[in-house]
Length: 120
Image (cartoon, rainbow, N blue to C red; front, top):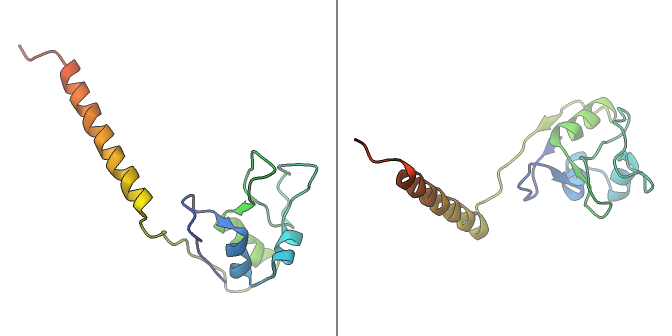
């Protein structure tokens, strides 16, 4: 089993990525998942696939790669379990955010240098 990120910046796997990693149907993943419509974040269940914490019931189910690997190895008894989290390719948004961050850091350095008293 090999898991990879599907464009998520947080390193978590969405339902489709888990589906591909476990080679199971979408319905199976929902059956495996430790969820309940009446309870947003259930306690850890070692027999189920435990999603990450959600703050809103409308948030998508996301799974940590290590949890998917644990579930595959311990519950589904898949012998070969490899978790590989791949970096997503750079996007224009990431490039823009990096340039904004660099500019803010430059402004901060300039402000810090102006705030220091001149050497005597």
